[in-house]
Length: 112
Image 1 (cartoon, rainbow, N blue to C red):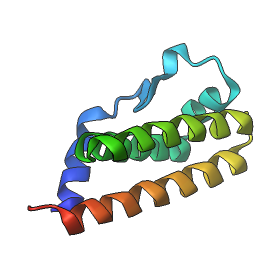
Image 2 (image 1 turned 60 degrees about the vertical axis):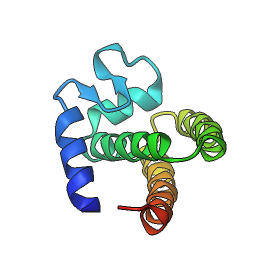
Image 3 (image 1 turned 120 degrees about the vertical axis):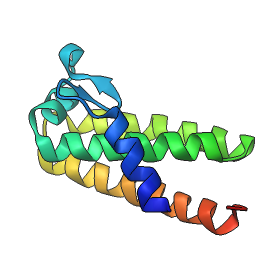
Image 4 (image 1 turned 180 degrees about the vertical axis):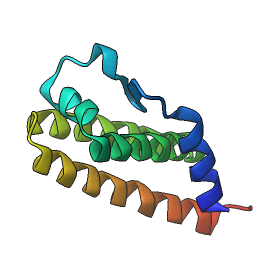
């Protein structure tokens, strides 16, 4: 069920000129340009964006506020990577792991 939900969400948001969390046509920052220029990073951005949105819409209000603050902090961390792909990959890997752990907690506690 979890995999199906994520797969459907990924299929609905990915387009050729847009990473999930921003429009590549408007990318100006070095981190955004590097993400748009690299398929693996773009794919990680799509996955991160979907997991973030599912988490944000599923968590209770206190958890949601914490998640939003964590995402802002993570975006600043990503921005500090500039165009360094290794740094961007590490940042995405960490964030994806955090969001996946959060999803696991949601699934364990949810009534579905």
